[in-house]
Length: 186
Image 1 (spheres, rainbow, N blue to C red):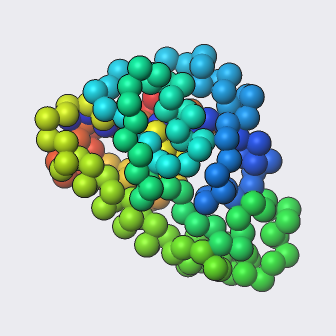
Image 2 (cartoon, rainbow, N blue to C red):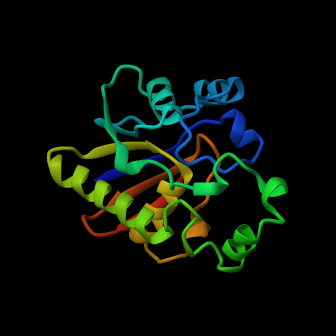
Image 3 (cartoon, rainbow, N blue to C red):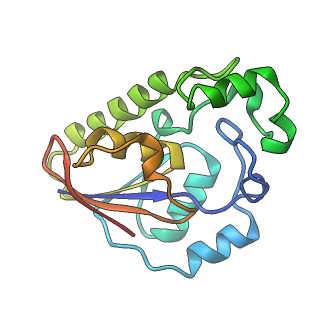
């Protein structure tokens, strides 16, 4: 089956390089314009994170299709880093500790990367198993969600951070039920 993973369009905070996880921010004008000017693959079913920026993106790309909303595909909860950028955090001891961990420890007052990845993987597997008749799925989600799914399922195995994609970008993958046996950038 074909899995299309699309990262939502740009937001104001994204342009400012802020950590945006649970913040429910809409697309900015540049994000709306970029999504409208791209061509995306067709699909049979569209799954979106419940984040406003994902729903808006999905509706722009697939206006004729109903969305299945899945809250467990939301971006990681950045905790006390939410809404801040590097310049605002660079002297914060908790931020320095998080950076030194290679991004592997939990965000203070937020979610751990492992819990986040497990949440996304469980949601993905449930959606696939609940829709056995579907051959082409489009997931309009967050950058971290895409990275979690690619790290888990892509072959050959690579690091979480190797799967970063820009806004409105993503991957087209062939899923054999266990792995993304083939994947290419959108």
